[in-house]
Amino acid sequence: MRRKLLLGNWKMNKTPSEALEFCNAAKEMGLAKLARANKVDMGVCVPAVDLQVVKKSLKNSLIVGAENCHWLDHGAYTGEVSIPMLKELNIGWCLIGHSERREYDNETSEKCNLKIKALLANGLVPVYCCGESEATYDAGNTKSFVEEQIIAGFKDLSEEEAAKVVIAYEPIWAIGTGKNASEEIAEDICGFIRKVLKKLYGAKVANKIRILYGGSVKPASVKGYLSQKDIDGALVGGASLDVNSYKQLLTAIL
Ligand code: PGA
Image (cartoon, rainbow, N blue to C red; front, side):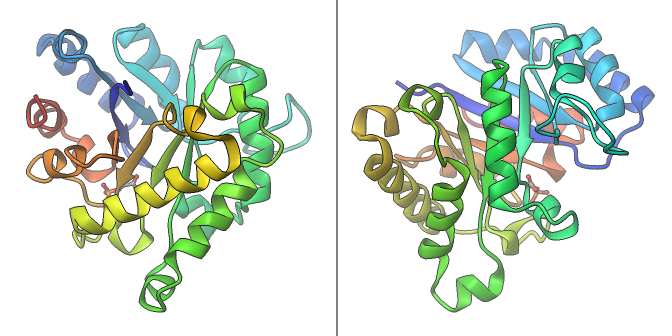
């Protein structure tokens, strides 16, 4: 059984004091307890400068993830965050290959693969994002595009390593646009991704890997996505910023 997973992605939002405000409210609401009692894994991926304050506040009650990392331990890479830095803060999760990073920071699937391998070697969970642009979708090339991203991102991973990766399918045309993919489209692609994983690793491993849908997920739509056979959770941007709406994402699926 794959446990449900709700992950927020704050992107470039919230200063450390705003982040702390969110954590205090989440604690007051007993959010982590509610998630645990209902066997839902829940957490937030936050800007690098918020990691310390958020982790200190939430401890291990909710998942705290980074939004990016470098694959090397240290070096002359101005502006980057290394995995040892994350480890020292006890951060256990990291988004990899979000479409915004692919678009604005030249993040390729090959770089994602290096990051995924480095995270796994250090015991962190990579959340590997994939998804097509509107032009690719309109041209009917979504499946071949996403398949390439999966194959390149998982290159050289053993079965044991692959089983630990979380995938987030996020069609770029649905991110932050309010134009979400229908449940049918999302399930079609998430089911297809599981088929690709089956080809690569066999059914046993493919059935262990959690696949999230992301792109304008709101409290009103989250349940529909999570009722789909191959969708195990959601990666949520905008609707994870306000703590009340973040809570509603959880209560909507209980
Ligand atoms: P959104 O963002 O929910 O605001 O569309 C999702 C994401 O980019 O992870």
